Picture 1 (cartoon, rainbow, N blue to C red):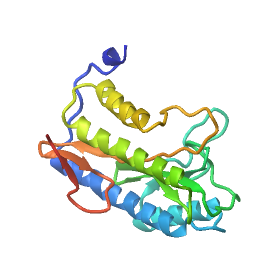
Picture 2 (cartoon, rainbow, N blue to C red; picture 1 turned 45 degrees about the vertical axis):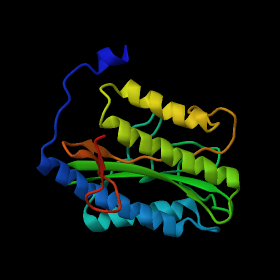
Picture 3 (cartoon, rainbow, N blue to C red; picture 1 turned 30 degrees about the vertical axis):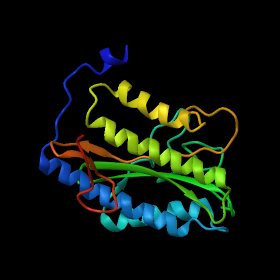
Picture 4 (cartoon, helix red, strand yellow; picture 1 turned 90 degrees about the vertical axis):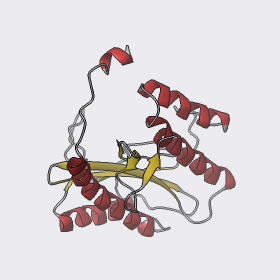
Length: 210
């Protein structure tokens, strides 16, 4: 069923278009650096959101999440901030970040018509060894996707490899148990040289084909 839905030939971006995506990606990367610096005990999640929105405004970039249509009301923030057992789509507000929290921050912007999106999981202060291992495995799962996308034909094949990494470490990819979760994302572009990480901190971050 999934293969039939994605049977159309993909739309290939030119090097120029990928370069424009990368400009948006740099802003998202900077936003996450800002988030890491602010995600400390005592900080309210709304303060982080407002700082990211101000950063986007300085660059003339549009926050993609704010105003996104929802079932009842549009999404009210420029970031999704989810803590501990919350997985995704958390709405920033007065909640205060505490020592030992896992803070998931997802944000995206549009610059000159081109978009980029990424998410990070930030351990705050001293967190348990199991929480740190959870974040490490999540990042390993993302790295697996980066590698496998360059050599697999179907997304389902990539997803299966990602799931195997998570489950072999003793974790699950759909959480219903109320335990802490991790969430990491990058915007990627498949090129002749390999998989370009559009939202990387450094320029020319490419996962070579193997």
